[in-house]
Length: 506
Image 1 (tube, rainbow, N blue to C red):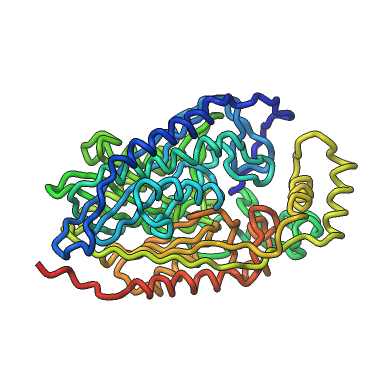
Image 2 (tube, rainbow, N blue to C red):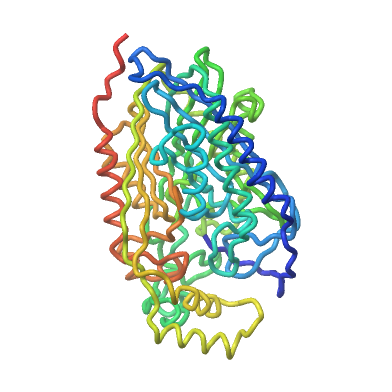
């Protein structure tokens, strides 16, 4: 999730976000819920097999109006004073006449479990969709307001308060927008913008903050080593180059919604400000290519695949170039190719299961915390952090009172013979590929940072190599053996929903 910022403010002046957000987010939204709730008509019990497949989509703007505001995904404090392009939450609701499921993608670096659960509860009160049949994920744009406290940028609490009802609103509006629909799916390839960013380095040349602050004694791997770094030896793992697409059309074949998935970290922006990065640009490109106006009623959603150890930079090419427009265009081209082969079905069964699992937390010892506090007092004081060492000393102190275990949510969703598996972590490409390989479905999408944010998920052998994604912090803290357990659980959930895949009888 991290990128270096060569220039950052030395001090962020406090400018309270106005209570306008609270009023809009709570009072107005409460009235919205009341009005919409009064309009709910009860679904007929025991939906007949001949019921229509229905779907609806919606998007809600989540761009803040109060600046400056801290952004997420950076080692040091970074502040935005404007929005370069809009941030949105985009939602899709599917209904097979028996079950309803909701999928939402938020233009945010990360949103924690508590905020997402609050949004789900608000949406359930109006739609009746069970919380366990809602999937909400973050795109992982690094140019969105901080909604989770991590590294140099702690969460903006007023923005989180602003965000929660708007996530719910997107789901509610998508639910209200349901019309008879049909679905299809497909897969394209976009290898040019997904590359493993972890490299094994010559001994002694990788970054190596004090073990007391990271919990990691050996560091042979380095993230983003640079184009001209002659100490890099080889990349540490595979990447997933697939662009997986779920397409939803109206009954008469007009574009209604599209959920895509790609496993690169983010592209970045060249100017300071808020941006949905390539995720938002992809959605705009797809609407244009499909000849429809975005949001009326078509909505595209771009979810993040398994990109914990990947980004869009090829460090083997000295003249490499990329930006959010280039990445969006390439991924959109792959998505359009996938749509050419999509076969649409008028009705498919829906199924969704959720599992909660608890894992140990790699907490710092009392000795480590004492050392970190002493270091910060002597070297940092009240100023913002500036270096890797200072950052991980601060993270050590921040984790001093953390619980010994953390509960996470895992999900599997079936849409006919298409499936989605989720993790709440920044997941490695090898894990995503393994889940897809073991899935019983003809096509499987894996979405990370879904239903919370529980840090990086390195496979156990990656801890032997060390490097940024293994260092103990609020960005990486689950027990060393968590990855195989999570991977196996997601595969088991996919197998649970793999039942009769025959089309309904007419």
